[in-house]
Image 1 (cartoon, helix red, strand yellow):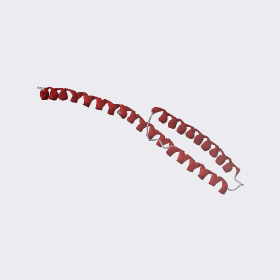
Image 2 (cartoon, helix red, strand yellow):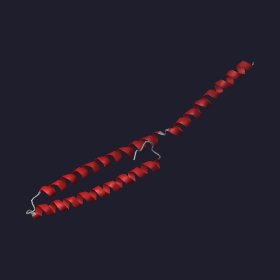
Image 3 (cartoon, one colour):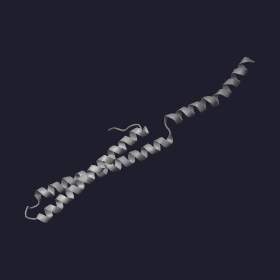
Image 4 (cartoon, helix red, strand yellow):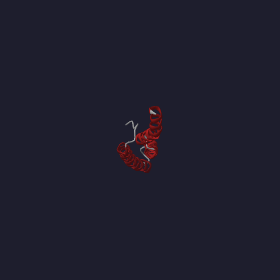
Length: 114
């Protein structure tokens, strides 16, 4: 009688253990959170790529300013104006990246290497 009762108790408790394990697994890695984290990381990677492009553009602009003849004042003025615009855009991009990183940390996304 005791072995039959033990088998019945074990059979009934198996689904409970499976449900608890599923809940624990769900609590550790929520699919919605991981999808949101992937999206946040993708946006951050896009902004970092934009930052690198702006840095390259700024460097190229500064090289052109150094190499351009001083006699061409309009060219110099345009290059200086372009340099200011690129610097402003780079500043805004850096602020956006910093804000994104803070949002990623606040969201609880693992694996952000700053």
